[in-house]
Length: 178
Image (cartoon, rainbow, N blue to C red):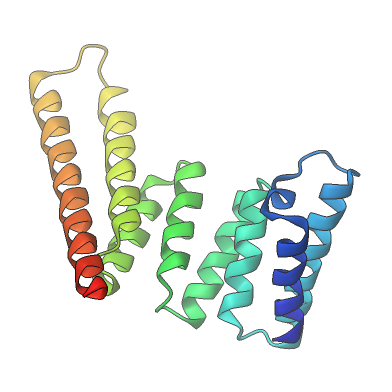
């Protein structure tokens, strides 16, 4: 716990943009690597720490190491399937890797637990659209009217999910404000 918190403090001290330092050897890259080492150390001390696994995934995602980030988010979900942010981040990594099936499945699993998760619905909608366009439209030089109708239906379905999630979030905020 203490080591994980040191990682968070290091990020807060240096600023979140240190995670995105790409020039190896720069002061920011050294600080980013130190934060990654702190989260690894926290995991070595307590491998069941889902928050440390998720935090390591965020650091790796920001650093552009999407394959490792995927593994970290998966480990975090195995340990604690009740953390919405991990589903969201895992979906983002899958989208970055163009693994649309995984992005859809992770987002669906997250939406089952968190039906008001706007970002989960967004990830699912993007993945559905990307999966459809890559698979169906690449197979044909001229899109068939049925393909266009299917694409429109899937887009409308995704927009409906987003609007529903947004309305639920608004209701939740109004309830909290009372």
